[in-house]
Image 1 (cartoon, one colour):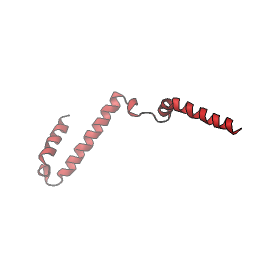
Image 2 (tube, helix red, strand yellow; image 1 turned 180 degrees about the vertical axis):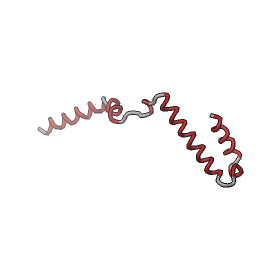
Image 3 (tube, one colour; image 1 turned 30 degrees about the vertical axis):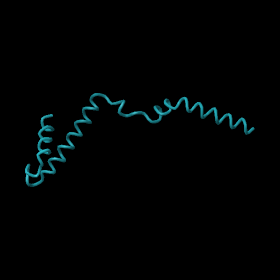
Image 4 (cartoon, one colour; image 1 turned 90 degrees about the vertical axis):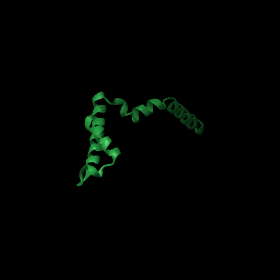
Length: 81
């Protein structure tokens, strides 16, 4: 009886091994893969807006003088997009 259980366990493990890619895709799908062009654009836009907000909050009360040269260039690039 124990031999049958052991063989059954081995069979299950072999089947799981050969179907691991299907199992992975079924239970853990790649979310990036399902992005549409609009989703990608909106995601990029949100990232740009976050970066602009961070730079503007960095400016604070003193204005643009608080920003480094690198930050000023980046703010100019982002504002042109």
